[in-house]
Every structure is written in structure tokens, then in C-alpha cells.
Length: 217
Image 1 (tube, helix red, strand yellow):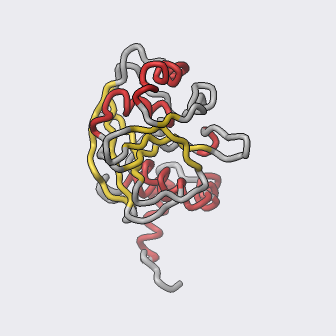
Image 2: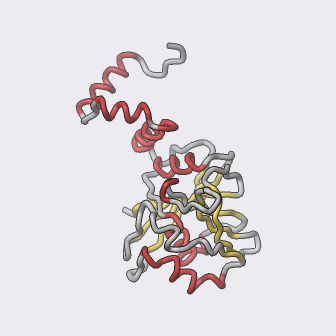
Image 3: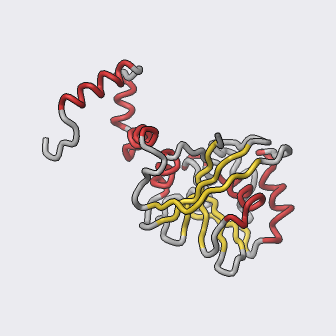
């Protein structure tokens, strides 16, 4: 095989280690058949140091916030809109608790999270953003996460960028045209904010950033 990166000996030793850790035929087949090599990328992301990320992304900054003790995932977006909607120059009214009830991870009241911001050097697909978050051992907080970033730490967001809060495709709201919609908060160059919905199938570019929510140690 051309361009082999691992020697046969190393491959054999690696396989023995994986088998001793519980790898079996069924799990191996899941890794092989994983769309976009997603599972294998997640495995490598766990091994690599946090600074080793996709070259299309660059770390910008990180900050922490503590979820309010009265936070309720089921009503967060309605509560947020009532308190903060007037502060946005644009607010998509489809960002509702009903539409985004299926967030993969529900943030925990009273818990502190670290939010890492990654800028984009090259265009990428939504799945690449999910892979980046997995490589950082991050969680997917969806629209609720984006709302809390604005509510608790909006001044941490550099101006002139759009901040995407990804979730798994099947957890996203599907609009009347059949498109899965991705929530993101924009901060214009003059400091104004908008709360938008993008499209999971579209490419994201250099004006966008990825919000990566992580458990604080």
C-alpha cells in the first residue's frame, strides 16, 4: 500500500491495545462505516492535545459563564426573548422552545462552562464544525447555549463576526421547506446584535466563528 503512515508492527500493536480495551467486530464495523470517518476523527481528537485542531480553524479566545440557578431548558428561549429581544436589531421568531426542544445537551443550572471561540480560515461544512467541537471534548448546546452566551457574556464576542452554536442535524428544527436550521448570534462592526438561523447544509465562511461549550474543570 502506497503512502503508508504506520508500520505493520505498529498497526498490530495498536490493534492489540484496542482489542484489550474492548474493541470487537461490531464496534470495528461501526468505525469503518461511520459517515465522513466521524468516529475515527473523534477518537483521534481525544488523543491529541486540545491545541491540535483542524487547520481551517484558529483559536480566538475563551471565557467562562455560570448558568443561572433558575435556568429551565424547557422555557429558556421564551424567557430569553421576553427579556432580551428588544436588544437585537434582528431576531428570528422561529427560535422557540418548541422548535429547539431537542438540544443534544441541556445546560445545568448553577454549573460553570468554558466557551471557546474558533475563527474560520477556510470555508467548511456544518459536520466539520461538529467534528471540531468533538475534538475539543465539547458539548452541543444549540439555541439555548447561544442565548446564554448573549445573556451572560455578550461583551466577550468580538465585533464583526457571527457565532454559530451547532447541534446534531437531527436535533435541529426543520423549516417548512425541509431545511435543518442552525442558530447563531451575530455582532456587527458597530456592536449591534442579531439572532439568526442558518442552514445546516450551507458552507460557513471567514465571517463566522464556532462556539465550543466545554465543561470547566
